[in-house]
Image (cartoon, rainbow, N blue to C red; front, top):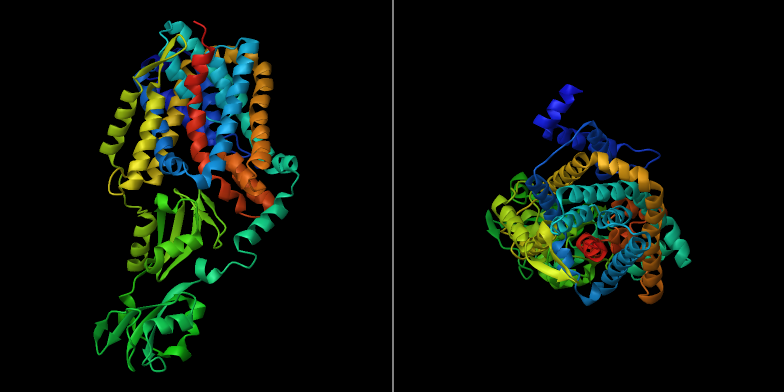
Amino acid sequence: MDTVRWIIATAPEIFLLLAIALGTILGRVKLLGFSFGTTACTLIVAVLIGQLGSFTFPSVLRVVLFSLFVFTIGYRSGPEFFASLSVQTLAQVALALVLGGTGLAIVLIFAFAFGLDPGTASGLAAGALTQSSVIGTASGALSQLGLPKAALEQQEANIAAGYAVTYVLGYILTLIYVPLFAPKLMGINLKEEAKKLEIELSGGKPPKAENLHYRKFQARAYRVAAAAGRTVRAIEDEIGSRTVIERIVRENADIEPHPDTVLEAGDDIVIAGRTAAIVAARPVIGTEIDADEILKAIPGNVIDVLVDSRKLHGRSLQEVADRVGDNARGVFLRTLTRMGHEVPLSPDTRLYVGDVMTLVGSTRNIERAAAQVGQILRSGDRTDIAFLATGIAAGLLAGLVGFRVGGIALSLGGGGGALIAGLVCGWLRSRRPTMGALPPAAQQTLSDLGLGGFIAAIGLGNGHAAWVAIQAHGVLLVGMGLVVTLVPLIVATLFAYHVLRMNPVITCGALAGAMTVDAAVTGCCDVAESQTPVLGVAVPYAVGNVVLTVLGPIIVALTYTG
């Protein structure tokens, strides 16, 4: 033990990294198809390791780690958050606000009824509402109160205890409630309603797959015979399926394939589109030829495009296609992904800022179409460290600005400031794609490392006190956590279905989004045997991340008694 204590005193960061590693490994383990998540496991591991001795970490380390995490949340949610402030998505915003507001009200009721201190109340909210970022914002708010070091450490230990006891319960309850009990509360069969929604989205008819789906896109070369004397537009219209003439070679010279260009006998042309349509085009055009050279000049591609145009937010794919017009010529939509889940495609499927469209076609056509809807995601993009560091620094500076709630002087704190900075920077990036690159893989790394490191530091630094608090209030916290999780979900369900008149399938997806529990979305899709619940996730997820995160300072302000 002497050796362990020496390592703790000399290099506590070793145990911090070990807690992150062990928590991540345990968080990936599934029991009966369920995993506890890396955040909860990291905290539990850290609290247990914290029993080995007294860990001390510089406050600046925790501030930086949490700022990286919460800035990334804001950066990721920024475009969707600001775009959600529109009439088309007002109902989904209202659902997220009702859920967060109800959760806050219940936590405050319990805090006043049972005399909970700010730390315990904040930990209860963080765990039961499944929003880990509340730990950081509440901790930041507590640090602004001028508490003695011992009192501050006890409050942070209480946050850790409240979170550790209630998070797993809140996560499991959300996973069960959203796909199974929410439909029963609305009196609907989720599978049947999903089928109805699919039919509604397709206008009562099977979706026009040729306009929306990828079907073995390729290019082939033909020598013009039957098509001689006809325009490019006429041939493309007759072949159908949005097939396009990509290249015309006449007497070894390239002719620009404008819609009104007239084809001549002997022209070599390249047509691109669905395989079935291209193969069937021979009688319309002429003989297929082996022309590798002219085909090589038409590089095909599959490219992911991030939707960031607010003008397209909330509009149907049909409306988007009409707006993009001729710029979509020769481009096919392979998949539409929202929050990591594939969205079912039909002409009436709504597009939201933050969605990722996988486009198929020639490189030049995709780049032309992508310019109208968003920015191409390139795996080679490097993180703009200067933009990232400046944004976080500006957020931390904003967090120093003080305000008063009653007789208590508070500020946004580093966490709140970094969140706002992230929202703004994410929005700026969507407006100016040439600045502030932070690729998705880098976002995930910063988020995981920032939150994992912060949670591990909290657990290690307050391990003994947190364990004592868990033993003292564990049963009470479990009971309160159950109520704090379920009542907001029930209220939001009834409000969405009876007041907002939202589609019940969309409501289920929105509930999962507002609670920021991705796995609940997957559960809904499994029960519905459809991807339609994904349609309601994006906006409540963005709003929920912001609303739930700011609950930390609010709870501290309203429960601190001096």
